[in-house]
Image (cartoon, rainbow, N blue to C red):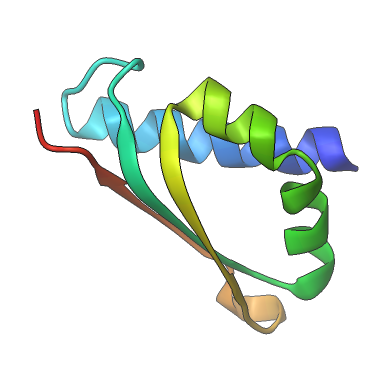
Length: 78
C-alpha cells in the first residue's frame, strides 16, 4: 500500500537523522531512493507528504531490481 511504503521511507529518513545526531526537523538536501518500479510508484504517490514530513528538498527516484532496494539520505549542512 501507499501508506506502508511511505511509512517505511519516513522511518529510514528518521533513522539517518538520528544516526547523524541531528534533530528530526533537520532538512534533507537530497533523498535518493532505489527500488522497484512498483514500489517507487507507491512512494511517488505520497511525494508531497514525504517531502513535508521529512523536510526533504529533493528526491531522486532510481528504479532497480528486486534485490537492490536502498535509501541514501544527504542532510543539509547546518
